[in-house]
Image (tube, rainbow, N blue to C red; front, side, top):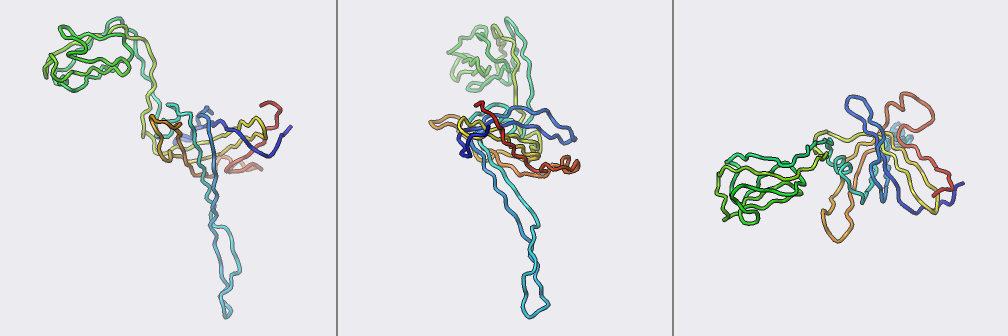
Length: 256
């Protein structure tokens, strides 16, 4: 049973990507959305009767309809950032090793610079004859080994880095700016506990990130998206009573 016409609450956002080859990805959860705005602008074509003494407007009809949607989220995940940056998600497998030895090209050994071991979360790092904290600094989280300026490792020295207890991990990386545009179906399911809930199905949206977000700060970071609502040609070709652009369904339920 529907509750009231007053809406309070947030929503959940789902996405179904349309690929350039015509295929469609399965529906995935995209993140929580804190707010949605929709703007529709209609351009009118006017015709004037010029046969009389004065030109008279005798016809006015819409020539185009443009609808844009803007939504934002404070649930910033790698998936969300990947979509915002028009990227592809990749997986990198890291094998478990008790002691991983990395022979470093001497040209990459320079005081004040960093050697990237491309290995994360090892529990320790050693370089024979050199002292950690004095000659080099190891950051387990990033896998970076910094050659300390003024330390005992001279420029262009041949070194071998040994990483201890490398864990097996699957890491996700967003290869940003790998696709030209983000097209697909967006579904918003509202989650009000006090009023009606709705499912908004936007059939085909071209979307990009809009604005910026704080990496670290006092305020809660939000990520905003803006998109152009376009016709879904597959729906249009099939015909029927549903919209070619967006369907809004009231979810009638007594469950919050």
